[in-house]
Amino acid sequence: MLDIELIRQDTEYVQDALAVRGTEFNMDKIINLDKQRRDLLKETEGLKAKRNTTSKNIGRMENDEDRSSLVADMRKVGEKISQLDQQVRGTESKLNALMLELPNIPDADTPQGTNDSDNVTIKVFGKENDFNFTPKPHWELGSDLGIIDFERGVKLSGSRFYVLNNAGARLQRALISFMLDLHTRQGYSECYLPFMVKEVNFTTAGQLPKFSDNIYHDVEDDAWFVTTAEVPLTNLHRDEILENDTLPLYYTAYTPCFRREKVTAGKEVRGIKRGHQFDKVEMYALTHPEESYKVLEKMLADAEETCIKLGLRYRVRRLCSGDLGFGSRITYDIEVWAPGCNEWLEVSSVSNCGDFQSRRANTRFRPKKGAKSKYLHTLNGSGLGVPRTLIAVLENNQRQDGTITIPEVLRPWMSGEDSIG
Image (tube, rainbow, N blue to C red; front, top):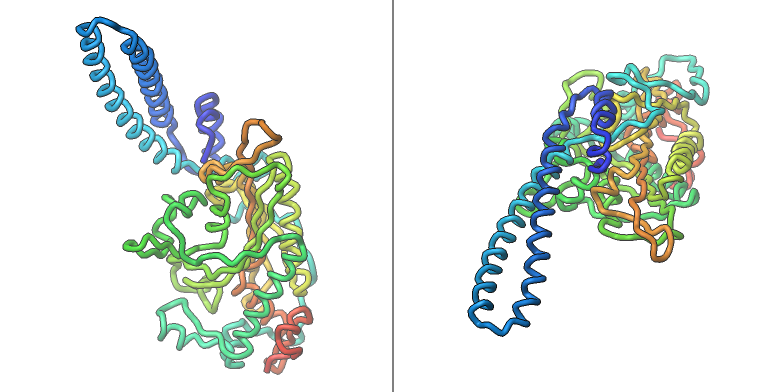
């Protein structure tokens, strides 16, 4: 959530800053509701002060008739205060609803653009494998090896579901364990989180109300299936004031992710690239505002190290304003090369959200004892998305005979085996 004080003091700046995202936001309603709310609060506080002063005087009055008259007057004042309090709540509710629709302000280093074609490649690491044969896409490799079963996945759950068998299932589990172990060595604390959370968690993380049609949920139980571990991690310290010396806090967690996103049939959904259910390992940080960009660089490097240790060719792209996530100021995407699909696949987005989420979550820190608390900064990053990483591992390590070389770093979780098939 943006700072209402910033909107109040520099409305034009906020409006222009949000316009580069490609959507116009009219601030007039917000400004008017904010003024209405402050006027109501001022009137309410004045009446409450009057009531308090009069109440003290009533206790000292000797004339019963005068006392009764003032008591009657104060009863009317109390009724007026109740009416005003109700108006304040209604106005705050309308204001909050509008504030929740505003995305974060892009950082000055975020390039302006309208879509992913305007994203900027800032780094390419590794060389493309020199195959002496035409590499197969993972859906052919997986089917031929009997490790990916698309037909039974559809039979069980419908389109864009699949079953991993034998070495396929073990390889996925190996990737998750490898990622979690690596991130804990990098300084992150591992968490096991609920996969279903209450609605407020999604609002705090910035996914509601905007992305409500992308989330699976059980209305009766107020149970919402996580779209990413970022959602519960954002809420771990909701409504808390952290001590200065506890920051930065780093967390990592594995969760399945559930998304209803609708994608038309074609190359984009072929294989296991885009499912309604997929696994992901997340990195998350809470830090001092002045340290957040240093933390961003660390998290980006940590995600890159995951790709490097797996022996994957990758590139880093800085997202443009039109492709930026709702709650992000600046985002780097990491994409790995998949030679069978013949395309770059995004496996990580590493973002600095500034104080956008902490304002929604009311998560603060105290700079020093006795000082006023401040909103901290939050950052998140995939470390990595498992299905597309699995795709890259299969396609980059395939042999001409259709077998797969298992990356050395994954072999401890594969019973020491060095190949599949």
